[in-house]
Image (tube, rainbow, N blue to C red; front, side, top):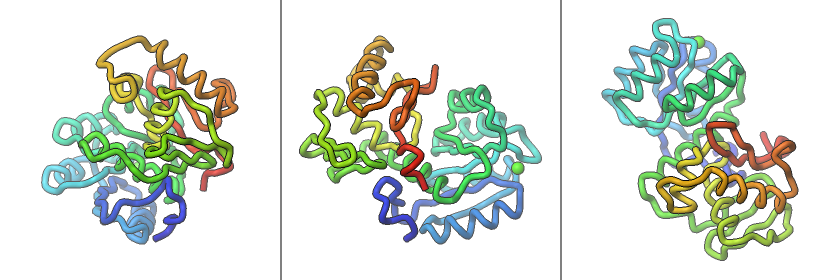
Length: 246
Ligand code: CA
């Protein structure tokens, strides 16, 4: 299985993906590469066909091109969300932050800006799938998490960066482990409060303060992030820094 040596992008067995893409060339390339990466792939070229697919089949993840011939991307996403809560990764040709933020709010789980490599796509898909499984109540991972130079052992509650042990408080560790369990996925603040602090609501400052302590221990700052990225008004994500990415 390609990429299997990289723990942070392990592909779950036989995950099924619906590729919604009208460009025949991009579509065949994705089908071939995702099949090689052990995904079960179906694909369609319009939003209406996509709606029919998700109404009839169960998918683990949908990759949705925003530039489809029949429906505007955000319209397509809204209609998909009306009938399914399957994780959706948006593929957009425009690196338009305002639009991406709007789509994340409208129910997209993640996004990729074209052109992207299949390694990047499968990494995002694996992350989205891990998160979906976590939400559905599967037990927390008991094996070591690795994201770039980070190694996190949830059982021993120990974390290392580039082989150097990190001295983390309980909350810092929980926050790091939670984010590292879904690398590349933007986690909304509300979800962090619920999952890490076990609070239904609370003060954003609580999260910001812990994030800034955690950043300091990881040797980074908000202005020069490496692992921890804050998306204003959206949430937080942890991903390997550029030098660790495929
Ligand atoms: Ca298109």
